[in-house]
Image (cartoon, rainbow, N blue to C red; front, side, top):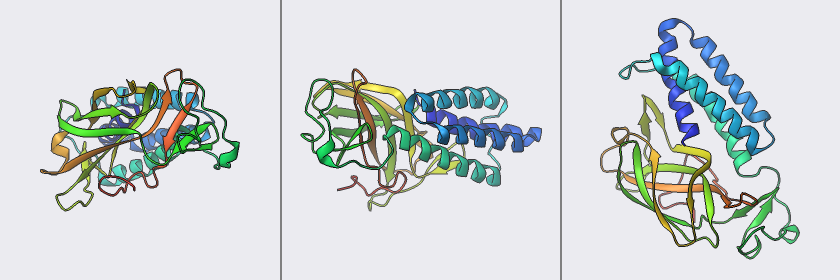
Length: 253
């Protein structure tokens, strides 16, 4: 389930509806409340609950917005600022947060598979941070809801993918903006306790939410996975996103 993207699009639709009802100020205040709650969270369970609450609230309130309505530019900017902070706090939780610990202190990774050190990673709090994602994602086609990728796991154990991001590039390799519900963005992010599961060597189709007409024609689509967990959820893994929005074509080297 695309909790973050649903919440963002619902919030923008909500601002369109509230613009007519005169309640945009209350909507922004509510979004700021959710953002503060997310930033106050200390673990992923808390973040998942805030995500779920915001998604439910935004989806219910946005039902009155017409599909062809566009959000007020000023309100859209305010909501984008709020959601940027919200996303930063959520990603920090998903990635484990805290300062990196010395590699020598890294404990063995629970479950079947290599230790964090053997994988070439470093422990950050309770998360094993790797230099690169062990998944191959190839754009296949456009689906009803977004861009469909064929994702192959090169990891050493079954995993649950918890964070996915979509990027678009022009023919020269420069990153381009995408548009959803009248809102421009550098990336479309999806985050949940389980987006999909992969066994070692397994290939699955995965769809990242983004309307086809929201991407410039002829764009090259790429996907990146920032966090995942072992199948038993006892071990968290991630890669450093460096900058979640600005990313070189073909990823960080």
